[in-house]
Length: 230
Picture 1 (cartoon, rainbow, N blue to C red):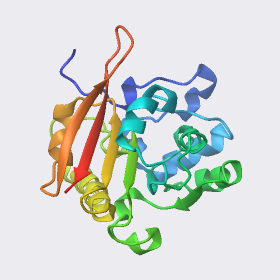
Picture 2 (cartoon, rainbow, N blue to C red; picture 1 turned 45 degrees about the vertical axis):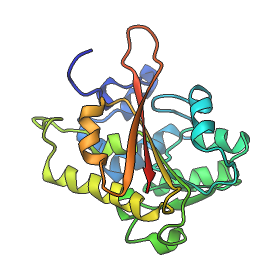
Picture 3 (tube, rainbow, N blue to C red; picture 1 turned 60 degrees about the vertical axis):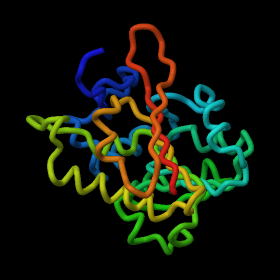
Picture 4 (cartoon, rainbow, N blue to C red; picture 1 turned 90 degrees about the vertical axis):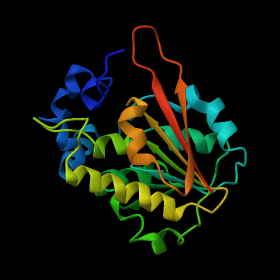
């Protein structure tokens, strides 16, 4: 395995008809303007970064044995994860994304779950709108943190900029504040190798475990970080 980060440029690409939605540089993945434009162009298309729910169902069911758990999805996008988990019996799901274009569309498409326009960097400051501090059983991030950590030209994955570090800390510390003490879990699915993420996810208030998920021959593995609050 190459000792470089598997980032958005290494992710599965859309067909050529959708090439116009790809960013000019990876740092665009951090911006609301980029995602609003992308979702406006994509219409009602579904797209899943990394794995779909069916590929991680068994491990998710093990990590979330109580289907009545209160689940918060971060940066949901037009993924099928929330919908598929709902169909599988998880009925208390709230989805947040900072793209108004996306949220308005998904509210209409998937009214059985809750949708809110919210930036993951505002979790702590807007906790009251989410039910308050310490009120969530499960928080799930599938590629959203990767977008926050996407590097622009000349930037290093080994030494993210101060702005990237601040953005990541805002999300991670916000998640920590929202999780229920002793039982809450933060589940993060990523393409990035553990040594690129562990330093930014480690906190005194939770235990961190990394699971390596199966991958097809010749491809990078995926990693599931599980942070269990103490």
